[in-house]
Length: 176
Image 1 (cartoon, rainbow, N blue to C red):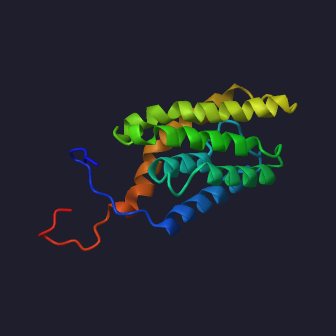
Image 2 (cartoon, rainbow, N blue to C red):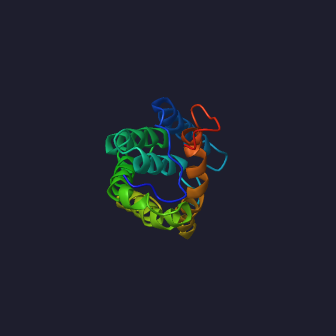
C-alpha cells in the first residue's frame, strides 16, 4: 500500500487494547445510562464511536457480529426492545466497513465530516425502532448526538491510535 506523505507507519494493533477499549466504552455507556436523569437523548454514544473507529481501522477483527453482541448488551442493560441497539450498531459497523478504505485516505478532520452520516443513520434506525415499538419521541435535542459524536471523532482517533504510533526500538539511525 502506498503511504501518504507525512503519515507515520503504524505498529500492529494489540488485540488486548482493542477489546479493552471496547469494554471501557461499554462500561462508560452503562455508567452514563445509570445517571440521575437517565440517558439524555443528546449525549453521544461512546460505544458507537469506538465501534466505528475499530470497524474502520481493524475490520478483520471488529465487525458486524461484534457490533451486534455489544448492541444486545446495551439493549439488555437499558431494558430497551431486544435488538434495537443491536440493529443500529450492526448497520453502523456495516457502513463503517463499507467506507473504511476510502476514509483512511483523508485527514482526521475530514474523516469527522464523513462519519457524520453514519452516526445519523444509526440514530435514525434507533429512533425508528423505538417509535415503531410505541416509545415516546425523545425530542429534537437528539439531533445533537450524531453531531457531537462526529466532533469527538478526532479525539477518539488520537487516543486510540497512540499505542500504535510509538516506535518499538527508537534510535538515531532508523527514521521509522
